Length: 265
Image (cartoon, rainbow, N blue to C red):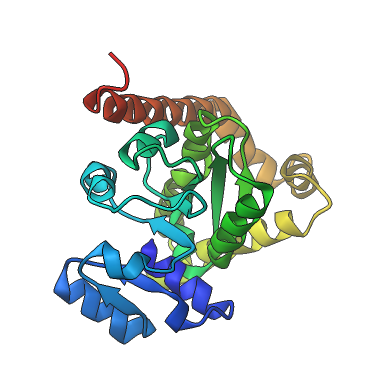
């Protein structure tokens, strides 16, 4: 995700010389330098010198060690965390009380600058710094702000895990297409382009997906026959249960990290 952000920022006109990366793995650092032309550092000190924004793009289980090894941050330094499950109160504690923090939950289409991210800002974050975080994340897609940090669990369930649901639907459609006699190439093209086209049509508006579905479902037609089976199998209920399970698991992971750090009993 860090590489996706770098690529997105450069594509939107950010100069490579404005970006400094801390990467302790020499091979990964070399790949970043050769791919994007950015400066890499083994330690945070040189990278943070005169920096206005710190993006924390590390795995949740590494966040405590990484943040607690940082030097004290200036109060006005903007901190953006894209680590899943690491709540801002815990992150602030690890950063010695730093409170200018925005937490972001992007998803994997950010890799091709087509992602969407949920953003939450700590109460003291200024409107200017919120807009800065928004601009940074828009380098890899769209953004949605939430007013409660707990809403990021729902964001995780909808968009964070959402690509996997779509990929699963693609898999099922391709398998069914093959069972109907289509070859692999035809099945793949038909399914991928159908999903892409449907999403683009839904985004083009003004009709909501439910209305678009009604328009393509002629009474007594082929689509109605298929949709009737999906309704009978409880597709809506399955998605509702699945996404609630994802949100609950996101909350559990956040509680687990907080419990390990002694934030909650």
